[in-house]
Amino acid sequence: MPPTVSPTTAGSLRLVGLTKRYRTGDQALSDVTLEVPPGQVLGLIGPSGAGKSTLIRCINRLVEPSAGRVFLDETEITALHAGGLRRARRRMGMIFQEYALVERLTVMENVLSGRLGYVSFWRSLFRRFPPRDIENAFRLLERVGLTEHADKRADALSGGQRQRVGIARALAQEPELLLVDEPTASLDPKTSRQIMRLIREVCAERGLAAIVNIHDVALAQQFMMRIVGLRAGRVVYDGPPEGLTPAVLTEIYGEEDWGPLKPAQTDEEADDAAGIPDDQDIARAL
Ligand SMILES: Nc1ncnc2c1ncn2[C@@H]1O[C@H](COP(=O)(O)OP(=O)(O)O)[C@@H](O)[C@H]1O
Ligand SMILES: [Mg+2]
Image (tube, rainbow, N blue to C red; front, side, top):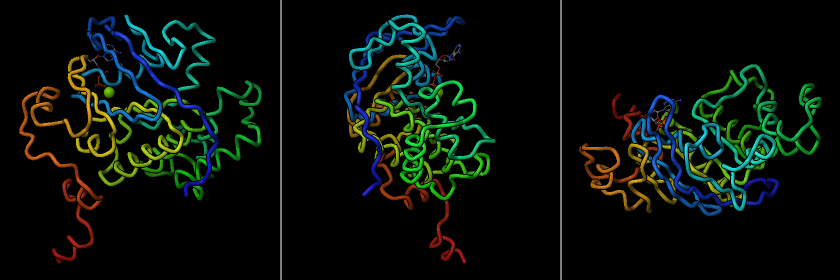
């Protein structure tokens, strides 16, 4: 049994005609309409420049959409101003590729920083958090397997451990939705799979919806419930992972020899696929 975590209400996300043209003239998103029900973990795939990060950032308006609307349950995010937007952003946890940790703070302090939207300015200035927040942060660290690292500085951790801190911090916010941008881009294949599995599990435990940007097709196929394929800012595929045939992948990524596509089933297979030797390989080679 996973350790108990504080309950959250899950939200559903709706994007209607979401469009983004940057000042430079780049048309990053064109008329994207999507609905993500509570509990659904959606993988957003597509080549570099397809608009994946733009889409994630338009949802919490780190990037301002040019047109279209975003709803989290009944709240229209795109209609909110300063205070309302700040409150709405707390409802959406973000996990980044670069982990965005504060290097000189401890693991615990980084997780607690997820609560900063909730504690008063003065308390946060002196890094004083209510006991309930601290207890919850310990539970989250236990959940992501970092209990014994709570007092380590963030810059002393491995990439996988750092991403676990990023996940715990996003959860400390008690979000209703997770927005995840290439969480495994700088991790080895085995760690990538562990992180994807953890994201899937915490979403299931909390009934959270998530949008996970991911460029690795095999990872997306194995861990995502639904796949949306973006190409040049447009949705060109929306369906189950099994529907990602070579023809569909060519539609998303362009011409490529996809070969027989079969997601690796075990960590060892993933390592084999990536050419990472395990003990058996080494024994064979000796
Ligand atoms: N801040 C920005 N200013 C101008 N153009 C941008 C900016 N961010 C992204 N773009 C452009 O928007 C398109 C989509 O980029 P992005 O959302 O980063 O795609 P992805 O995450 O799929 O790689 C690209 O053409 C990119 O060059
Ligand atoms: Mg991106």
